[in-house]
Amino acid sequence: MPSIDMPERATPAAHVFKRLKRSLSYLGLSKRADHPALMLMAMHYSLAMKAFSEMESLTRDDENGVTRKHPLLQVIRDSSEMFKSYAAEFGMTPVSRERITTREAELDPFDAFMKEKEL
Image 1 (spheres, rainbow, N blue to C red):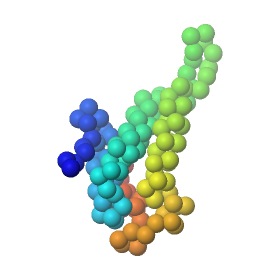
Image 2: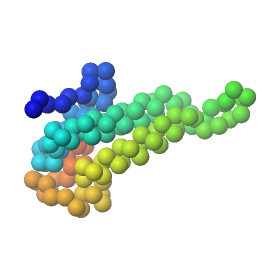
Image 3: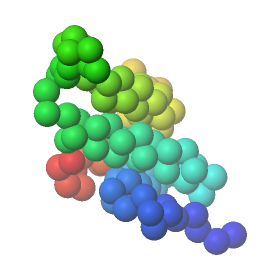
């Protein structure tokens, strides 16, 4: 079965996907069947970071000149929730880490992910 790779057009997410895949594979927690979920996890992370980088402030004026919260805050919130959901499935949250056994018990999945390179 051929490996599933991140689509070329999703370049910012591709880097995160590769790191997630490598970290989880190293710990024996990732299989090829997991790659689509890892792709979505990486895309949600990248989408939240892109939205954050495009915001100049937490508020903006609407078409009537009324100051409102920036709409990209919702994109960040939604993407963060989805990322957290996938992270829990892969043992990358404090609670879910307690439920898994890795090849290297002293190195948990999130530490392996973060150890690769600071996001």
